[in-house]
Length: 88
Image 1 (spheres, rainbow, N blue to C red):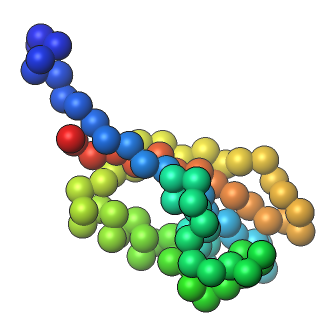
Image 2 (cartoon, rainbow, N blue to C red):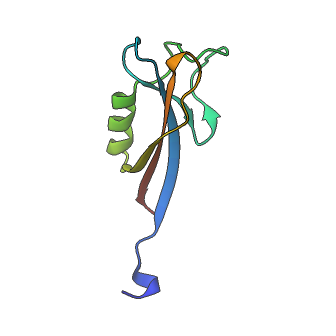
Image 3 (tube, one colour):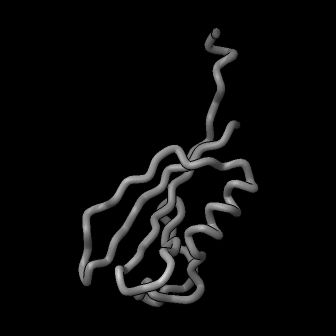
């Protein structure tokens, strides 16, 4: 495969937060920008839920390239960063 024939990719990332005693994980940042109107707190109903967001991104041609658990935070909060890609 020549360099001209190589697949080119577009990337995006998003961060998901969750707590062990809370329901579904939800998206809090996309490409470094806050999602919704958290008002300083991440437990806010305007954040998209993880599975709904993944399905929406999949419908737009994105696929998960990797997911990494970030350092645990306060109050047993968990944060995971997802890297998505799609053909350019």
